[in-house]
Amino acid sequence: MLLASLLNLAGESFLTVSYHYGLGKHDQDLTFDQLVNTSKWIWIQYTPAILSSATARVSITVLLVRLLAPKVALKWFLIATTTLSVAAIVAQIITVFNQMKPVEGLWNPLVGTLQFSPTVAEIEGNVIGALFAFGDLVYVLAPVLVVWKLNMPFRRKLSLCILLSLSLITMGISIAKSVNATSSAGTLYGNTLGLFFAAVEQTFVIILGCVPPLSSITKLNLPPAILHMTNSVKQLVGSSQAHNTT
Image 1 (cartoon, one colour):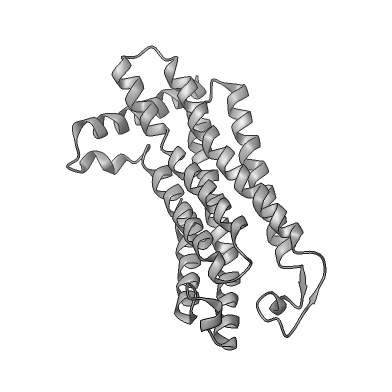
Image 2 (cartoon, rainbow, N blue to C red; image 1 turned 120 degrees about the vertical axis):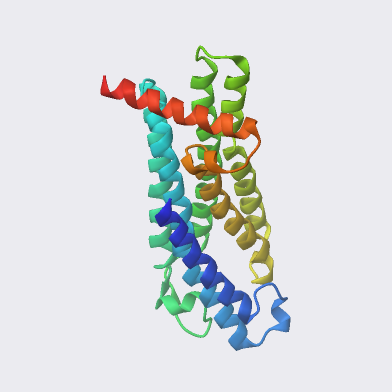
């Protein structure tokens, strides 16, 4: 998660530079140099931004694998889903930065030769968006199915399920990102909302992925119900580790 946070910080810093040059304004209101620089910094932020989302989801998978240790089928399904998402991300990074020669042609229309149709990268982007949304759903359903069958008080089970279901928020943001990305007219202005939702998604994945196992949260002055939920997750992780040891 620390690596994901650093990658997210780098991506958002580069995107901030793009806003400095005019991202968010209508294309016709920008000079040619502004258009080129705005687009360039969008492309520069792309790699750390998408790797941030991937790394955070890998971290969440590591946590959930510990929770699901006794459920072998669910555990490997979760691993396979995350692995597929990461593989799709690596494939798109390679595709995106090889579709123009030289790579400067991605943001400067005066240089570069198109190597293959940009539709390939668009399709890969849609696939990644679908995998992210599906993965966020799996991150909710897998642990909830396990927790709901545990022999514990109903209130405790319900609170655990609510805490472990926070990924539904990122799933909704991921869908909003994909919808805005595919509905844009191919202009910088049209891509603004897609970039916004992508940034929000990356940040929420990191925040919500850190909430369940956060030990320091018990030291904060929070409502007893929230502290009870986090303690329950910590106990659940501990019992799973003990099961692995035995």
